[in-house]
Amino acid sequence: MWQKFQRMWKVKDLRNSILFVLGMLVILRATAHIPVPGVNTEGLRQLFAGNQVLGLLNVFSGGTIKNFSIVMLGVAPYITSSIIFQLLVMVVPSLEEMQKEGESGQQKINMYTRILSVPLAVLQAFGLIKLLSSTQATILGDVNTFKWVAILTTVTAGTVFLMWIGELITDKRIGNGISILIFAGIVAALPTAVQNAIVNYTSSDLTTYILFAIIAVVTIVGVVIITEGQRNIPISYARQVRGRGAGANSSLPLRVNMAGVIPIIFAISVVLFPPMIAQLFVNGTGFLARASGVIINLFNNQIFYGALYFLLVFGFTYFYTAVIFRPEKMAEDLQRQGAFIPGIRPGKQTEEYLAKTMNRLLFSGATFLAAIAILPLLMTAVTSSQFMAIGGTSLLIIVSVAIDIAKQVDSQLTMHAYERV
Image (tube, rainbow, N blue to C red; front, side, top):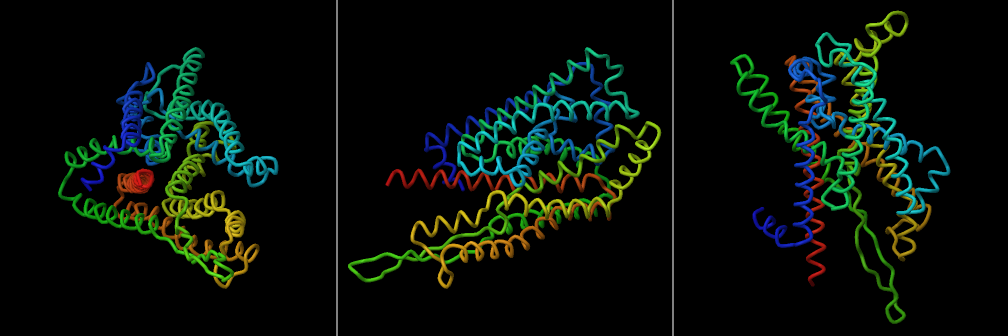
């Protein structure tokens, strides 16, 4: 391990990239502690301590909502926009053709995603502020028109600022910038969480702490297994040497979970949306108020919440893999290179074989990832501790992002070693 750190430090480009990312994360944590003026931060902390939905929303934002900071939304609007455009790419022919253009087409889609993030940030900021204002806790007091405009403008600018930082981090090839921002927010909150756990510990909490330790170990082991697991498809390259057929053998790795932590992030963003919107209308009258009450009660039901979370993680694993894994393009590339899978005809049969094999792998990977995701919720039902659910989700994201960062760094070290040869 120490030797790897020494190698990382000796590679100038990699060292500069790591220092740059660390600098961006310092800026992130600085902005996360700049609250919107006029906020009762103590009342806000008490509100988040007793609400599971708001607690998960705080985890998802990287801990910025709890401080009602200028970057309180985190990168949630950008992620919502990404989900929308990835769905549109699959149903809108013009966007699908744009994606097939390669890097230039992807840059256009990214530009549209960033543009859509701005109105989504305004809407989400408005909804969240109305949600917090509708609670019994005094968070903002009287909000006039000028204050509304000032808060919405500031929070939207904070989201755009984080989007920019996330893209700068992604460009450094250390990992996905958006995931790293969420990762950094969760890690920054760990010392406080550990301190609170120690200070508030009583002998009756021993069982809960032991269960959480077991869940932590199972989550880490499970995420590593599904992230590292892969199936190697044998590949043969036909070559002609002096009139005789000769072949070179290789393998094509298909990962059990190609989507990484993205399904978890997508699922959390979707599962938090209905109860958050319902909170806006629950204090009103008429049909909307009654429907909002039903939705809130439904999502407070741990069985429904856990089943929905499981299905969302499972579905988004398939969805995101379908976006990034293209068996038709892979079969075409193999055929162009003169490669083939032994016993499988090049072209359409190769495409069908790759798709069928990937679906089988993906079923086990998606099921395992979804089961790991709801494991803390199951333990929450046993212990009645909200910390179990929030802590389990945080741990899942931390492990997944850490593995991705380690892989990115290893690939850069390997590439540098080849360049020196």
